[in-house]
Image 1: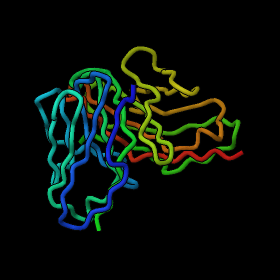
Image 2: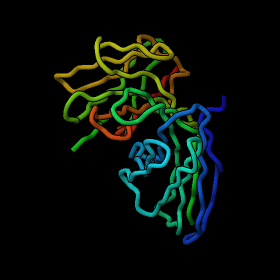
Image 3: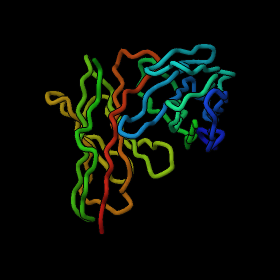
Image 4: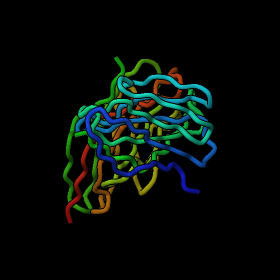
Length: 115
Length: 115
């Protein structure tokens, strides 16, 4: 049981390049999330998927798109990377979202640098 | 606006002494409250949560947290700190009405435990 996995672990991009961050969970969770972590700002939600087939914007969605490929996988795409998107990206999942009490489980993160 | 505040960027404690990491929140209604820990270059790990009931919640690694509704606080505590407790700690809140199970995170508190 690997939990939440993310690829790649590290990535360096040039301004304007595109890339997709992959996330997968093997816990049969319904809800999945993408956060970014910046120093002194905690974690901020980019997008989330309450259940398979649905996605919604979080606090900082601009410059990103997501795809809930199936119940296991939730990818984050940067179409045209900017230096402001330099950050550490975390994927998370929980059994159910909505009005539930379940904690989220986090992946190990992807450290992205945009030059 | 909904928010979570961790008023101390850093907390320094000697090994064996009690530790407290503070968290206050501003959310309407009755929120669900969480503490997470992040070790260097790792994802976040769930420590404990408050949903309802007893105001003192016990969690992993000997940590506990006290919910105080009148002060809108959820401080993390441990009776005797270990050097291995040194890490970044995040408080998070989920408003009970929140669709998708979204979490609002504090900015984090760096805990340093010295021998």
